[in-house]
Amino acid sequence: MGSGFRKFCLQCCCCCCVGDEDDDDEKQPLVPQDPLEYFNREVQKRRDEETNLWSEPGDPSHSEREDDRALYQLLQARNKTRMGSTGYRRLSVDIEAMRDTRREVRDKWKTILENLGFMAEADTLLNVSAGASHDRMRNATAARSMLQTLHSETSLFSSREPPPERYLFILDRLLYLDIAEDFLAKAKRFYPPRDDSDEDTPGLAINLPLLLARVEAMNGGGEEDESERDDGNMTD
Image 1 (cartoon, rainbow, N blue to C red):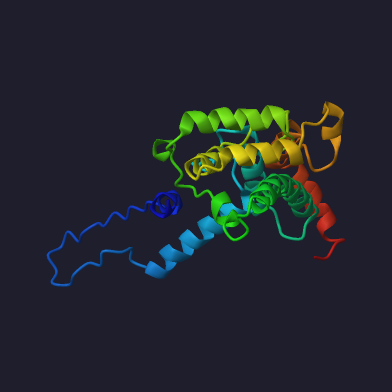
Image 2 (tube, helix red, strand yellow; image 1 turned 30 degrees about the vertical axis):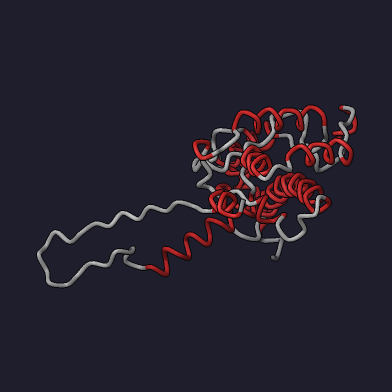
């Protein structure tokens, strides 16, 4: 069991080494020219993954799902907006709202895992790296079936959009550890399905079309002009 679980947590890295075309005596290193920069980039990538909890962790473009695309575009728009401006603050509010919604889902899963006795292992079980691949899954069919059951028979996810693919990989781990059925039973008991009206609670649903339209408007320059006008009257 230990070796099987370890495979789920490993991330494959491929470093392409380009040799020097000149026949110099100096040997070229087998790592990137600046190892510190490379590792800092990897650390930042993992920090970004844990912060944004991408619904499609294996999609580097963050464009396959509408919710990932909305969050990614908000982040890109904020990077192009002057810090401290009205536009920057508005974007930050929208970004944190989306992140909070994703953290709420993750916290529910963590609560169930801890209740099952996985106090120390919960965070590791819930970690999904950008290198996650469907090809490495052991129980893909069963995991997808269980994900749909959780989506329709519990309130772990919003019923208005498909469940995030990242939890497919987590369920595959739970199936391998033979605790998936126990997890499903706990989820049904702790988080029974809601009525549609209950999902109007702030933080449980994000108006993705509105956010995308807002980002497109900012990319057009209208919102940025307004933020620049207001910026002189505000301090960070």
